[in-house]
Amino acid sequence: MRFLCDKCNGSGWIRLEDGNLDVCDKCWGLGYIDATSENNPEIQQKIKLSRNSIISMLAGMAIYYAAVFFIMRYFRLSLVYAFFMIFFGYYAGIISNSIYLHFHDRRGKNPGHTKSS
Image (cartoon, rainbow, N blue to C red):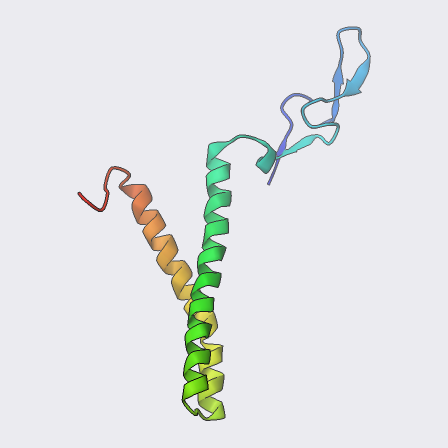
């Protein structure tokens, strides 16, 4: 995410005390600042949530596919059943992502609530 540089107002140039133009030392002449380069805790929290959300989805899919391939190795399934079991791995990832987001949102609403309380 990009934000307009507040030092040069998006031009990329600043006027020095002697009247000469110089490249803005905050955005380095780009006119904008990447959100990841700023130390904004709200933006960093959103980036962390997105990263963890993707990781939870991939972990859910990995666990599901490990179980499916274990079952397919020891049990003889028809091609149709095998296809559906592989196909539904996508939904296993979505479900694990939804569970992660639900518990993350729930924890954010009750910051003082812990497991022991």
